[in-house]
Image (tube, rainbow, N blue to C red; front, side, top):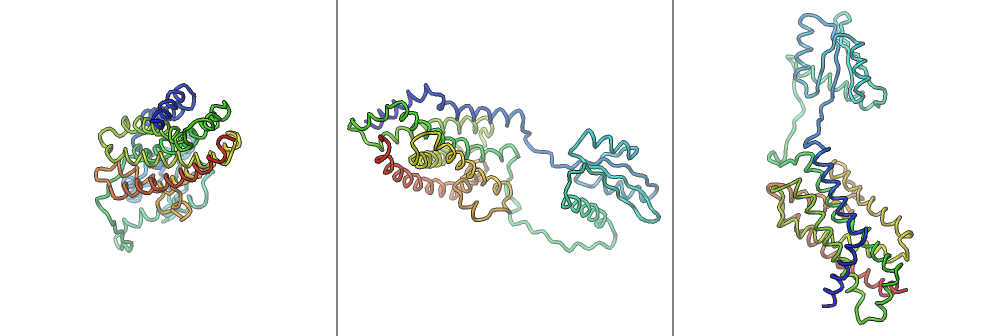
Length: 344
């Protein structure tokens, strides 16, 4: 009963504070940005403005290659027109194609900020586009797809795991520490020393408040963006356990400091470090051990599973179990430290 009383009391007090609404406000901002700013799928085409000074069969062959390319080629009447177009669209590139004897000359017009690697890629792409059109071309590269039926999320939904991980899970890391230090500053925490209550009951009350806001922000983000596509029955235990982990981690870090100002650097540094896992999430080929060991790394892929039509539930519940155990361990360590330092 004391635990429930602490939770209800903390909910009432927290609802009057600024911190209670930070996570919810961030969730609403993310929803607005994803719905009205971020496109459902990004345009990955590179735009090239092209001027061709060619005639006859060569001109026809070049046009055929350009039309079959994955990039967007726009034909213009002169090199000057190409340069004028590049000045207006700084993310594009240009090319002037002409004949010099029996050779076709490609004169690429770039913006000036491109590195050598980008220039080599352009050269290789042009050569390969024409190589496949030659009669004696022999393809020596074999591409084998391991899972031809692998489901892909659109670009907007693919961003959701990052938002859920950092906002619904680890935003509470900062907020729960704020509650602890706020109670210290106001002196209300000293009442624990003269009451029959336990430190762990006090801490669990704070964790309960963070869980409520975490669940609320998670659903605020997920429902309007994923709709009926998400597997909510599996999402709830995953969000609860990862949110518990974030709260326990925040309690543990804050236990080493006596003011919010001293803890701020470590709290923000932890959130930024956890954010590095998003690099490997978007580029799975780059996943060094130091990133795979971050707790946010498996979280990202677990949240991604609940957005798929056929989720890998073993991965989801492996994360539920893992972060449930880690939460208990961190909470016990934090409880031990707060017994010695909380009322000091």
